[in-house]
Length: 508
Image 1 (cartoon, rainbow, N blue to C red):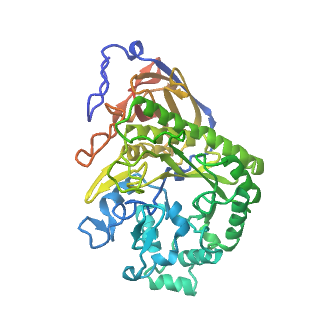
Image 2: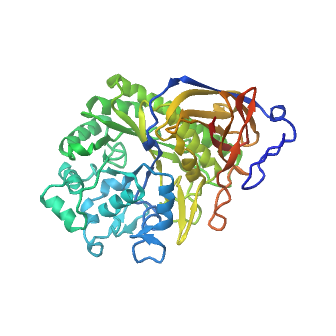
Image 3: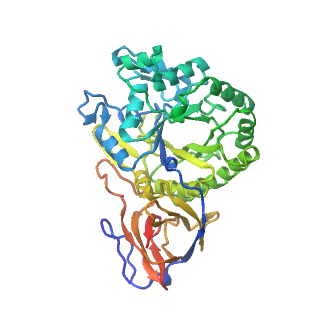
């Protein structure tokens, strides 16, 4: 049998049966055990005032020579609409807890210029404020997720901001919004009560943070018909005792609706975080091992939440996650700009598969970040724009939005200690089709995947010749999804899965 993948480089050519040359992995899907529906909001994004994430990445202004829609980059808007971004979190991040919402309303020429002390010490002229963000979310079809400043502003300020955005009454704040160009209130779906209150959001203890959440939540509200969800600031697996922080928030945080959690896959052992490209296999292996730790962290946090909320009414929002490397040489200090390679596609896919296994708790997530910052979907340089391997994984995984997951296991060799060669996720899509997501973590060996599912499968695959295969502004289509088809072995779907690849297929 000879198998090729069309639409790009020859990635796999087998002159004899794959089973004779490659390890066999057996995938078992139990369709008798459906899980809670996968909320589409786990495919959310994060856009902070950091580097060129907002200015130059999303917003260029109406007078820019770069093609734009009312100031928003046309290419970025179209790319985000294609993957149906469900939610965008803004304005931070650490930036949120020194942000005064009044700086970002009214005529742009009259808005104050502030120093972004968290990220590079550069100035921000507040051209992108409340109206610009809320209209942007509306433009791309995403639910807005606004983070309140509880670190340096009062509950009164937060209450006023929410009223400004959501009130339809004939009252001063709503009328001020109307005078600034927005007649109807926006639909504010998610409200973050602070950000990382254990760190840049106030250096609070868990107990004090819980008290702050209860206090602010009391005073901040939107019309009940809006169904706004208040999100308490939770812990992080990167810093501090996240289980103790979770316990304190669940115990004393008031009537919680959702609790956030942050985790970045970055070395924490004193080593350099390492480059985004040009790395060795040790860095590939280390990054995937760090990514897979998300499984244990989500389980830990869920177990603590279960103590206080056995009915699982409080949702878990992993609203900051992703890879974090040393920023690109020559880029502005503090802008966190990094390239995005095939390794990051594996990080994204493995993380989604973990979320699919915890749909009873995980109802929203936001990768950090959307454009030009950390594990970005999109990179821009002036008028140039490219889609990253991570973007392509978000695109490929769209069938899992609002799908019903099933228990699935992959039995076979490990790539390395603690890293299975193949990771799998399975779900019944809204269209009735059964989808598999398959990730081969081994950068050298293909896997012969045998399933217990009758029929065969076809879909898309993302892979490349090197572990750091990536797109550049001069070659923006070096890596992209290509058509991928399986075979049938004894009446069951089977796949010859290339090394270092991510595939999403429908089995029929």
